[in-house]
Length: 432
Image (cartoon, rainbow, N blue to C red; front, side, top):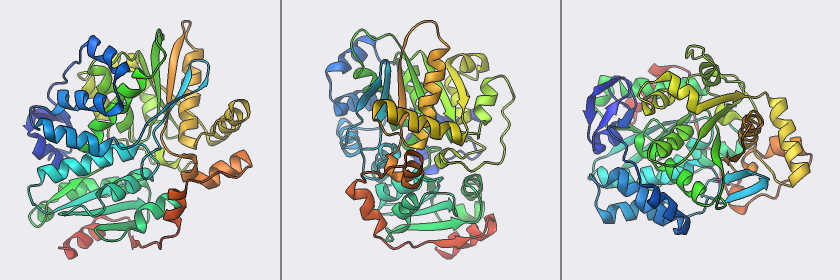
């Protein structure tokens, strides 16, 4: 399988090159040259399969040209060591809980797959993994790569704009994980990482790659839980709508990859906070990145989502088709808080702020349709990861998982750095 750049389809590379480079030289994102389509009969049989068995089938379809059967099984076994239960909270409304991994966020799936695949492809090379995070990516990647031989992880995060618990999850590990606390916003962190990939002076001295969703090794495996969720819907269900809380838009792009591979999803809801660049585009406006705005759903505080161009590529650049398949909604902090309170009161279910945004988008979409849908919204992080916001909103104490509280006991170790690429560049050069 070859992988092309979203900026130039004629630029293609191997799986190893795509994973290790992370970002194409022209700043495009890599995409598989072709997407295999699974048969309807196989998708139907997934109802009888375990999560791992589904994973073997999907990953084999995508990677069998480059990896052996044993490698594929190792990858899936390493990745899918925890469940992603589908929980019904209202009639026709289900929460897909993606927070049962080690850092209690959906990015555990992609981070574990990415670290294992890199270890298979590195062939004893030494690599620096650069990561920009608005919260959960940093914790998932830090824990997924912690102690992996031949890999040094450098995490850039915006000072004061991630929750204390998220920060503790990637600043207390030490070892091969270094956290840089940037005086800026997430988009600044992402920009600095991209500049490093394109810096010829750095390329001559070190091997750089990324474990953000711009890397196919982080992005592609997220399609697995879409297949799993559909397989767990009640038999005889109607049309399916997925609502995805969206910041950098990698998660929804992975769902669209699953749909392109044959999964019967009728529509996607791109639900965001007031950082509404993509919802505005879906309403017919030009794609116009803007400075991000801080909200209580901070993992979605992204004003220039990198994966937007993957959305277009998945539909062959057809903007009309993309706008028909994906519906955009955005919500204020007050609307998010009200949804958290209302659902807690009516159903007893506790949502984190990101899941609440996705729930609102799903409900608004379903209310606009004449025919019934089975709606699935993604609950991407445990509410405890946003404890202060959730407890203040609900006016009650959360029962915190012990593994979350264990992170809080660690000592924060981070290096303050200016919102300036030259400062980041100097740090990388000094670390050689």
